Image 1 (spheres, rainbow, N blue to C red):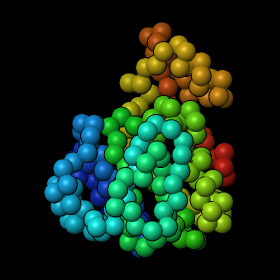
Image 2 (cartoon, rainbow, N blue to C red):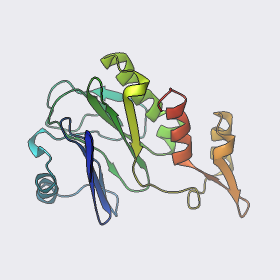
Image 3 (tube, helix red, strand yellow):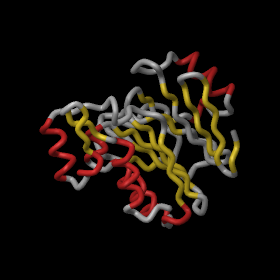
Image 4 (cartoon, helix red, strand yellow):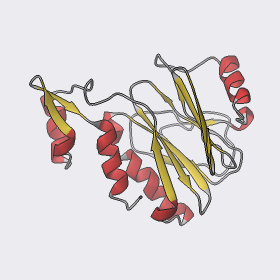
Length: 201
């Protein structure tokens, strides 16, 4: 599908998003891990990615953001988010239950992508990615769009009492619910709150 600067396609259990001038990519697998190089290359070529420029994050469940200003040929170590102003440079995140977030700044223009599990969400990787773009690229909130990939939902995301308390202490009481007396968290709801709090429409 195409909508202005952003186009995307969904293929079975795999979702791929592309900003047409400034490429943005997320590949969601049915099982954790990464595809072999040839199958990944085929997917990229089929859907219009520049595979040779593809940049991925190591994904360590933390809150570090890398600013990409040249094409790298290996994973960017120690980060869960990438932002770039470069043309034709796709950014890749691999997820199972976690959230992949896409950021498009139509004014700069620039793109970003982040990976958020419970640790990254608790440490606000989504907000920090947007804040890094605002600071580094002089972006303004009203020109930024954020989209979230499919991920685990509150109905299925049970957590320990301690983990629930961590999110409540962080200000997300409304996103912690008890289902059959077991705490569950709404990870997408928390991320939406973090984004909205930055003034993103």
